Image: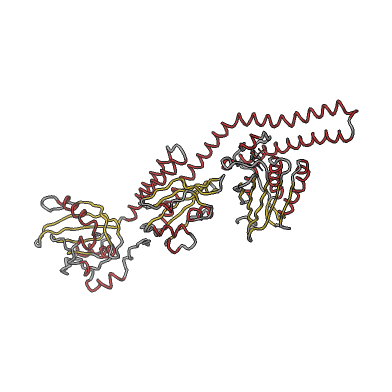
Amino acid sequence: MLSEPRRRPARTSTPWQATMSQQEDRVSCDGQSVGALEEVLSAALEAYIGVDAEGRVVGWNRAAFETFGYTQDQACGQPVMELIVPARLRAAHRARITRVSGDAGQVERQRLQLVVAHRDGHEFPIEATLTSTDGPDGRRFHVFAHDVTVTVRAQRFAAIEAAVSRGLADASSSKQAAERVVQSLAAGMGWPIVEMWLVDDARQVLVCAARSTTRDVRDFCQPELEYGVGLPGAVQASGRPRWIPDLAADATSLRSRLATRYGLRVAVGVPINSGSVTLGALAVYGEHVEDPEDSLTALLAGVAAHTGQYLERRRAEELAIELARTKDEFLAMVTHELRNPLSIITSTAALFDDELDDLSNEQQRQYLHIITRSAERLTVMTGDLLDLARLETGHLGIDPSAIDLAEVIGQAVHAAGTAAASKHLKLTADLDSTMCLYADADRLRQVADNLLSNAIKYTPAGGTVTVTAHLDGDDRIRWTVADTGIGIPAADRPRLFRRFYRASTALQHRIPGTGLGLVVTRAIIERHHGSISVADHDGPGTTFVITLPVKPPA
Ligand code: ADP
């Protein structure tokens, strides 16, 4: 049951008048007019219920009708407990009232919060004051009550937000933070399933960082989801909240149908954002949701915003720690990488100078070629370092225009031909004749050059490098660069796109490199709203797969 927010009928509403006008807003069930007092009670905004010593309704004003849904005729004479208290709560309510009424059964201005039921069956909290008087007809109890659904909800939501803030404040890891958020929501709202999903950048999947379940829902508990799959995937991909009022009718998702097997009926998902980046999603599943859609979504969005800020801070801290740790390593590596081509240039130039008179034209060309290659290596390295610095300060710009990707890739393949041939590698390209898209041609050429030079660098002589790029459906391009080289072990792949990370195979083969190119490559692809990943490989070699939208999202 997904209950609509219930509104009181307006004071002028017809149901009351239709049923009560002939009684002229009388309050006492016996119809005896008591003048001014009667008038006051019928005009009161508080529901008034008069109850006799037997517990039967003997007074019922207009506000009582509006609050509980029964007209006076329907209410009068009924046992009040049966009329407005849900069966499962009657014993507890009776005990409470007996407690406050003392031995003499006399109640002295008691204020109580109780859960009651409307005529239509929905339950809601009221705040009631209870007093009693003794008159000629015996003891009479007077209940003045009002619906406190909104106040109670606000208190419950505030308590959840406070629990989330406390949980995040001293969490020692992102995992612990996720668990605390999920527990606070599950405890505060009583939802059977609460999940927090976070993006795993390196593997391009959503990982369930924390989950709370109150029942055995084993099949439902996948540890990972592809982007776009299920409620968390859809919310993460769109960056927008999603409300599924009837999981059984959600034909788009297998996971929704699975949820119905466990008696779940409704679900809500909200994205976890940090700035413009979606870091994951919060998803809750329930049998019914009592709260209105907008206030519930607002609560979850608030919690998700808190979590997003926390994760952002945490990532920055982790990055700072990682950078500090790798600083020395990095300095040693960069110095080594810079020194290598520089010493080749200086020593070759010195030799050239010494032997100039004795060198044949061919030998001179070879010397110059060595110098040019080393200078090119330096240029690429300094370019990558500059791009990395821009990336860190958020200034890696993209200048898009209408371009033909086939032309960009074709030129890069052509330029790589000499390097491939000198290593005796077979370089082939299979490209659509034209692939128009709105993108930065220079930056995509940089991507093509980097992937090709890696493929050539990490493939021993005699191997093959294959480039393909095709329109995949109407709206995206699939571009691959595959080689038959030393490969990247599965264990290294998740860390491949981190700064300075080098796979164990590259280190074992002592192939020079800085671990910077792929970081910049991925940043460029993501700035074009695309993605890059390493395909799972059975045989030797490596395949990088890029997907690019033909039209970037508006
Ligand atoms: P670099 O090649 O300068 O080290 P990159 O960022 O381009 O830096 O690549 C990071 C790491 O990824 C490399 O050090 C290497 O371990 C691995 N790698 C990249 N491309 C390939 C490939 N085609 N074959 C095998 N390993 C690769």
